[in-house]
Image (cartoon, rainbow, N blue to C red; front, top):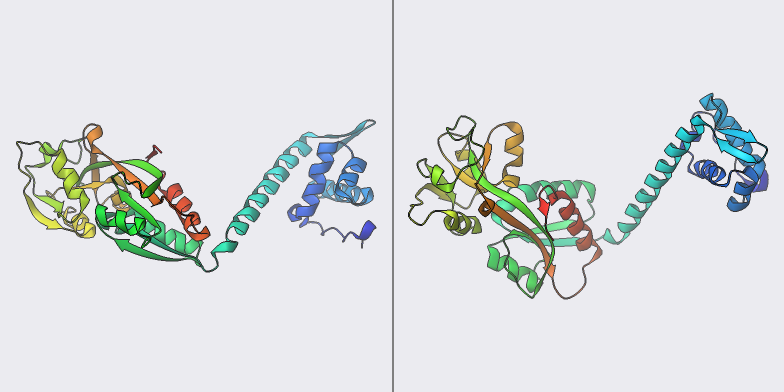
Length: 315
């Protein structure tokens, strides 16, 4: 054992990972003195000095310059202390994250959402969350805007993740993001090279549209010119089917960019933004206006907000 009951320092090759020893170096640099650091840390000065000497030998470079008025970091020491402080900072962040998970041992979260999100971006988020936080179970309930509102307001669901939610004094908006709506086509479609399109530009092609059970249909109809006729060749409440059908030109559908992220990366589909701000869709995260959130619900809500922040947050 070392002085004052200290355990021997780890052997060469493992010292850099010894958290307590890193704090010794950090405090010595802050105090500019081994004796002052030892007093602050309540350890033996000889123990700190021995660790510094062994670490200098391991690095084959001096950490401190010994001056008559105290210690000063060398150039090597400046590099080391920056690494040490980043390591200690990361360690503290990790410790706080673990502490925040203590209340999640038997957590359960119910999410109300829309069919397009459930089959697209939200599915990826849920898979990532389950991998990161397996102790929290999730239940997903799909509905239209009115039913999503009611599920959260009545307590049937903890959170809503949905597009273009109306104002409702029973609900509190935790976050709101803007995502572009656009035409989605195959890479060899005649429109695929366009930088942007209007709904009218797409009407001469066979349309695959969300059916009237999905709020997306209302959005597309509201953006269609009054004099134009919106005549789909296929209507469906399945976003996966919509994406599958438009992989064959010349079909066209309309979806939000986040709904086709994987297909854009793989090159199976092309997303063409609709002209102007009319094509921007509000993606909302909401919870009940009254009452507090459980640790699991709060943790999941912040996780979703982080993952959705690829859009422009406006809340």
